[in-house]
Image 1 (cartoon, one colour):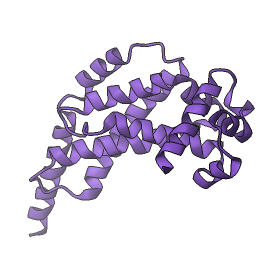
Image 2 (cartoon, helix red, strand yellow):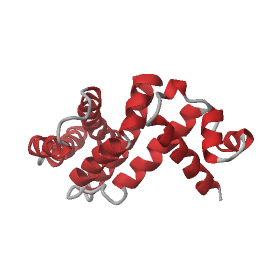
Image 3 (cartoon, helix red, strand yellow):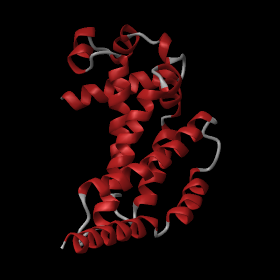
Image 4 (cartoon, one colour):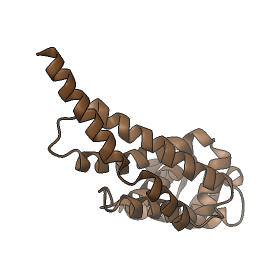
Length: 194
């Protein structure tokens, strides 16, 4: 029942965002549209921004589900773009209302989850330090989120497929090459210490 109520609140918020900006929407607006009490809202969320964040995380998690491999990361990233586009009023309002930092934190976590899956898959059987894997995933996370934020800032006009295609050309083979260099560095350090 909890998920059903949360989804209903999310739908009410999205419907209201088509009529007015986020900062003009109240909890009363949402609960009246949804047909539930304010107390029920507060049972699930601490405020409207909590609802916005939950909605973004839920939609994004669905977008990348099962797309955390080297062969599917582009599809997962494209689906993040599509989820953002599908929720354009919500994302645009969140981007301009709750501060860019909140949107960035959400996108960084989401993108990191996608990339660490790729890095772990590509490093399978290699002796790579966890901090090196994390560093590689973080590096690409910042690049991918930067592209996504720029796209949001510019009104989401460019075709996400074109962005992903260009990115794929740039990234192709680089994660594996980086892992191989870190592996070589570990081997070199081990021989030096012997």
